[in-house]
Length: 99
Image 1 (tube, rainbow, N blue to C red):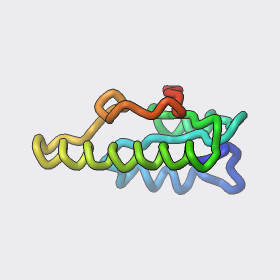
Image 2 (image 1 turned 90 degrees about the vertical axis):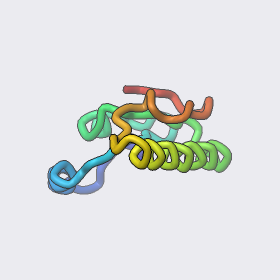
Image 3 (image 1 turned 135 degrees about the vertical axis):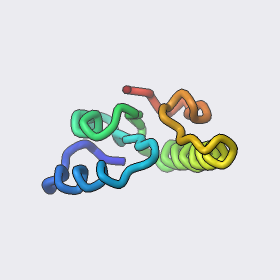
Image 4 (image 1 turned 60 degrees about the vertical axis):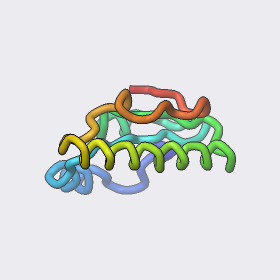
């Protein structure tokens, strides 16, 4: 979750993440006017949360929790990772699917 404006050099951390990542990374551009350019470089699964009030953020994290549960169940049952947003529970109306 980010406003999309890095305050440091994010690429070394991303390069390290690529070597160990085994799951689906979903980036969230948070706040009106958040820049999703960097998130799209990190993952092809990007959502936008334009209204970053407490209710919207709460619904976002409820969706994250449900998504983790769905992913865990899929791995347990089939041994396969979730590979895209379409395999997760429907997002709340506050979230806009970008990519």
